[in-house]
Length: 629
Ligand code: AGP
Image (cartoon, rainbow, N blue to C red; front, side, top):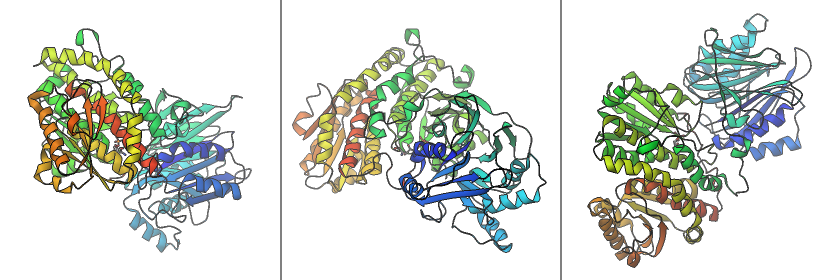
């Protein structure tokens, strides 16, 4: 949602913070702001700058009116929740006396009562945000505590104990020349520990490791309800909200700054689309054993736990939900366990039937999506087993799950998920096949063959990518469309949904995905002369002639004037007479086909958005990880 950076060390804090914000801007781009602490000795001042709009606006402001040099600073990039995306509501927020500056990610649910309390004390608020109360409360708490090395952290703990909701807070104080304090509940915060070339220690805070990846890969993961202090000389110390010491988990980030650069591509999205063969290969790496056996070391559930499962729920949001829909087809077919798929924001509110023998698979690229996290917690409260499929090491969702299967997509910066999706789908296959393996398999030969087929997926994705030039040209020709429909059956139905979502979020064109067979029950009325309809055609080898039925669906829409864009397997000649455009994909087993058929839809949406002149990486109104419900 929002991006947060903090720095204490020998370098120029503003440079470090702005560089971190550039890497975190995908988390929100409604406004950006920074604050630095200036002055020698114990009593200094804060200087801050903030601006609505993208980070570039703040950078321009700072170029015109630079802040004084400092070695301690904080920065924020915002996705607006409380209060519009204006200069006034941009973070940091300062206390009434200007001695404390705070940045925040999340929502403080009891802010109204706290605001009234502050106003009764005579505080005049300078913004419409929920965040600002924390700056005022922190200033008061600090002033009421005796001087001492722990004063700032204790003030933060005093404030946190009063807050409800979700928050990552980072604060700087004019009287604290060496120390930043931060806290987290239900929102992400990681610490980076580095050293400059001359051996001087430096400390970083970030919403995720991208904030400091250019400086260090040594990270510390914080637990729920913890306060962290980073101090130039005392280093790092972590406590819970009551002050009891806590030990953060150390880990080394397994990618470097280059992985989070555009690498010569116009857009991060294009780079991430191109990385998909590698991402899929890395997700499979080390997991496909000899003789069709799967090796999933990170699944910390016993074989008996897995044998006891009698129902699976897959719970996720957006694109990850579409991966879950594909998982249903695969897991049910391979394991014969019933699978339900549900959007996380609905899951817990309808009181689903869960118990010890239910496996809940939560899928999240970021590992921080609040709806998914809350669904996970609900599942655990009901005693269900939770397995997370996640891309972000050190994030909250895998930490709170019973087991985790990491996708190894590498950092995904573009707001629209691409390699995140493909690797989630692959991870779902691995979960399904693993369950089948542990529980005994109905289609033994088929499952063993599929395990081998998985090995071919990276090359097949690479083949699709080699043929994308005509898809780009097609995208340019579709850029003026008002509506584009997407059809699919069986596993191609979620692919159609994903194609429509990509187009909506990037190109702001009305798009809908339908189960191809449902079209005749209503949506076919949408089709007018020239309406583009993208049809994802299953393999001619798919069961129960789904292929033939989809070919009929293409004819039905064409007869009503649709411009048909058909994604079909190489050698499928049946579609040729009814396709205005054909996009070919390699022959792939039916259940694995989404890994190849999704790729042209990503490229199509990206090209249409680019042609329409939109920011492909940072579409309007969106943020990469949605850390509010
Ligand atoms: C995809 O392109 C999205 N922008 C969005 O739907 C995303 O997949 C969803 O918010 C879930 O995110 P997560 O995987 O990080 O939980």
